[in-house]
Image (cartoon, helix red, strand yellow):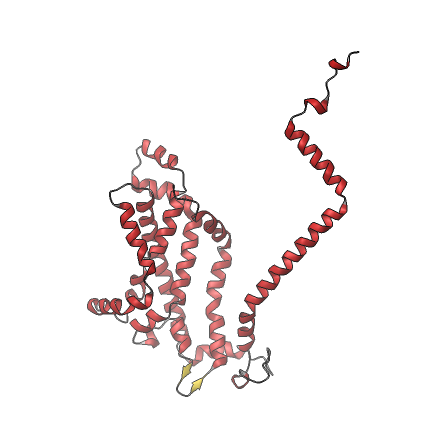
Length: 310
């Protein structure tokens, strides 16, 4: 029989298949040393990650154990991580030291209401800048984006004067509305919206949908991850805001927020460092729960928000 009539599997197989076969053969020849090296590199990488996490968590760990110390041992020398006794009662004493429940309630109301307003404004503005075509759109967006370069310390005095004109000093609307129209939220949503295929919206317009319907039923449902990212960032911003609530509120006992309330543990007669640490730990619980609950959306939203920009 002629050898020309016999099919050679090596000669006739595709180049990609041949390359994969040779690669697998080479991997088999490398033996256990290669897998052992990869496991060692993976172990070292994990150790670096754990070390970095420990370094970043060290201040939180120290704050937690400091909240359990007696106030007289806060600055003992040499420094000790754990005091002579664990005073869990410090967390309960926080609520009897001042109107701490009022501070928590005000912070929740301001943060939730402010987040809802920012989400509504930023999503609509981001849709207008990213999906609609109108004259001067890019120029207006550049001017709007330039407001990010103005620090808050420069604007607090003009904003306070405006609040006085409106008669809003020491009110919730003064704590919420001045920071409800942020360029950061609009920029984030615009970039995400521009990454959504235009064909989806064009198909809806062919069926008779207008811009509002396209925004509510097509674009917005596809942007849950970006909305989650903006919600977390905005909630943290309102929750941790200190300078503006300190300026625009007068009656701290009824309108103060948590950052302002934390400062109340320092007075003319001294500072209750133990209670202040305990209050700081309590104030971190809601934001920690929020970040953990939305962690999946945060990773996805942050990774996709910068991929737009056609």
